Length: 118
Image (cartoon, rainbow, N blue to C red; front, side):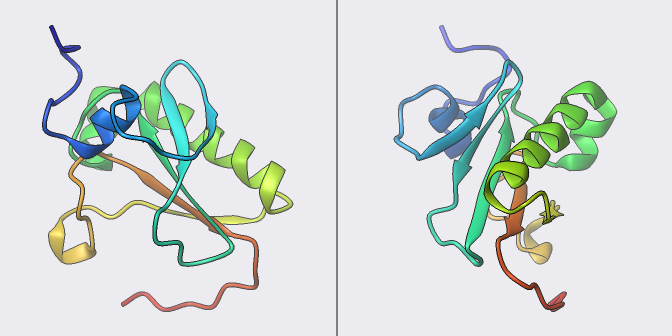
């Protein structure tokens, strides 16, 4: 029987469960971090809570401690791979660029980053 905090058809839930391979760089009890398959910077890692929720607003409302864990793991990854300097991005909704509706943070770094919000 699937974990009640997961969705069987969700790509990220399946990565968390080990059903789909990913290059995992860090993990803890509440989230995992793995390399983005289409990186936009030298460091581009996704931090995904093990709990399935659609976006960061839902995560903040339902499990703020897990949101803090996502940020802490992002910081740990950036400390080891980008001298602790990073951008943390949450896309919420299709028009903002969210394509997988399981909340995830993009950890971007490893280079001088410009600013292009669209």
